[in-house]
Length: 357
Ligand code: SF4
Image (cartoon, helix red, strand yellow):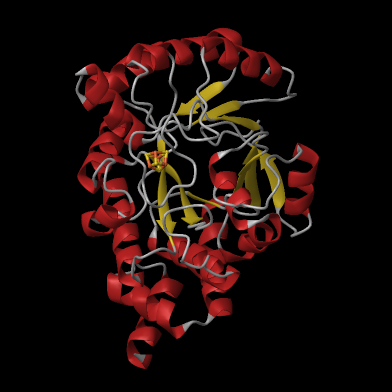
């Protein structure tokens, strides 16, 4: 192992592509500060002293879901307490309220798989966003939702994406990747898109000119090797399409899920995975720390582990908080820039496409 580890460190120092065994050796050696230093070098090579954030607003249209994944605390059948579904009027009211947010540049919308809402409902929502907030970019619908829409409408994945793009959809958030291994998915989310379907949606979106995030949900039943294989799959997809803008790793929050016997991974593990992701994903420009998942203190520390994006102001989030996240549901722009500036990095407000504003 010592020999493999030394080899992996040398490859990382020279900026060479890491293989599975290199990443495993780095993980197992557990030298957190060396990982941080290697990852920070990559971050500074890619984005210098800049750390990005945006002014965004999250909207979760419904938590009524036909999939009922064991990993999820958000989705539920329509007759369970707390079930809700926004209609057009509700969404319009939220958008009019959001219009008062100074500098709002992005709406981020992900939802559960409602069994009855037709695809045309979602097309109308996209058009409504663009009508009320024409200057704002819309990042919406995970590949899991896109597969659901294809089934509801009878359209192909490509047909669904083309219709959404024509209605005004700008990009996809890339959630629902979890671990791209169908054996793992069979146990944590058996009723939603397979690994192959997630990949099909992502590659189709990229080919249609819609960028996405790459994501990973870690800290449940998967092995470390499966995490690293997942990262390598994302890297290969990026070689093929170049459409991933950023990678976001989500630690699993077990509270209120069907897997609540599991323990939330530690901040040590979060930081190690962030640094490893920065090192393995040599062809993805940005590594995002989703502060609501990590907590603000850990997200700030993550800036020393290769992160160059702290996501956004969010304003109202329901999915992670259903799983017991104790973080705020939103943050001011001033607080976010203060957190970045305190580390010596330069806060840069960006739009959906990482263009400085
Ligand atoms: S993870 Fe998504 S698909 Fe699964 S139950 Fe939750 S909302 Fe539904």
